[in-house]
Amino acid sequence: FSPNSRRIVSGSEDKTVRVWDVQTGETVLGPLQGHEDQVQFVSFSPDGSRIVSGSEDGMVRCWDAVTGETVVGPLKGHQGSLNYISFSPDIDRIVSGSKDETVRVWDAGTGETILGPLQDHGGSVKSVSFSYNGKYIVSGSENGTIRVWD
Image 1 (spheres, rainbow, N blue to C red):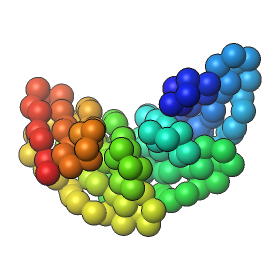
Image 2 (tube, helix red, strand yellow; image 1 turned 90 degrees about the vertical axis):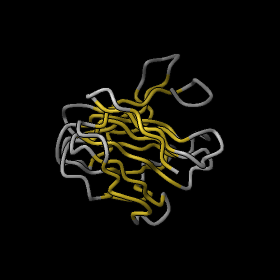
Image 3 (tube, rainbow, N blue to C red; image 1 turned 120 degrees about the vertical axis):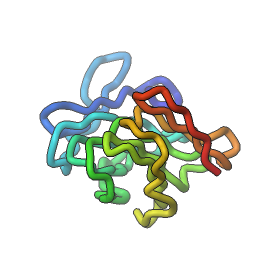
């Protein structure tokens, strides 16, 4: 859901991202194309201005939630499919967790890697998130480990 709960974003096996109107069920944006494999994860930024997507191709893409234009990406670095992606509260950074057992932090404006690969899970990273103040990152993996990074 978008922060105002008026839109839903979806990723698909057809390698695309779409935005839907909650009330009408109509597609209001998309299909957004650029991934080379099925889209595994999508999310709106906290302010609703951007959409981030990650796919089986290991790439992260960031889209303008109004125009559908690419804001940044593809962000390349993961060697496995993307499982989870999240914006920082100020939307300046993106954190991603992958099947390759790593966590990466990206600059949401330039696409440059800020931090990572962070490796200490020993299993596919299934969840990542910033703390509310944006200072910490928490990640969890399929082997049951949870890590906090600062």
